[in-house]
Image (cartoon, rainbow, N blue to C red; front, side, top):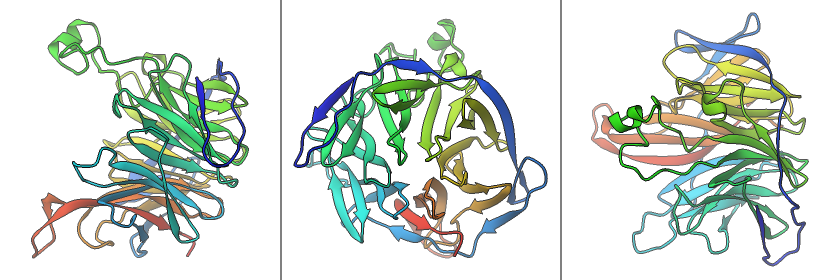
Length: 360
């Protein structure tokens, strides 16, 4: 499903959309913790802990919350910001940060917008929602040369466009399943189990996809729950895809897809693995259950954890993307009424975007 929304500048239109499937070869990569240092698999690896470098914080002016989701090779950044004002109908907006200037991104007529990815040409992908709200009314979009194109997967209820490479290939996730509305049927309650489903369907997952030349290619990790429950989150210039999937026990794993070959990526232990970004050199970023982030680079792993580095109490570090220069962007959450600065008062929870270069 495609709808074109014309703004000030002209752009290209998208053609008809048809689902296809990817090949299903699979291998495994294991990442593991050793003490407080992350060690990566395929033989011997070295690891470091990013504990002495302070990230550059990115806050949209006047916003109550900022998250950064994408960066291109020129260092242009996209993300979302939120203003907590009950008197305002639309509280969440996308943004572009380029050459030190912020530009708000709002899908025409939308009730909320988030920008997730940007390529070298300045094309931006993201998600907006209609008057049904963020749960049921989410749709993907492409913003190119000032023109918004709505992106909807085949027969999809929800579509999220999460990444775009320099060739214009778009990745994301769509789901054709809608919540039933039956009380107790969407969670691990008695009624849900009586219906024969020990685990609830996760609507943030569905069919991962690569969208190019007007066609959808499904990205469904072999063995994923319900034959789908996959999310494709990033794609590099070589067409490598990084993402996450849920297994039949609804445990989250990372994966890489390269030329039709799937690679499972895991950190052993109680924390679940999410892959969020990959660049042309094959450097991969991700996080462990929204607690600690990591960078994997040819067998060398760097832990990305801003706890005790940024002011306040950082309770989560979430890298979201990495560009070809090795710059990493994401967001961190700091403070909470349940967490206390030693010797000080409680710190209200707040979220900030960040950019960090491990090579400097």
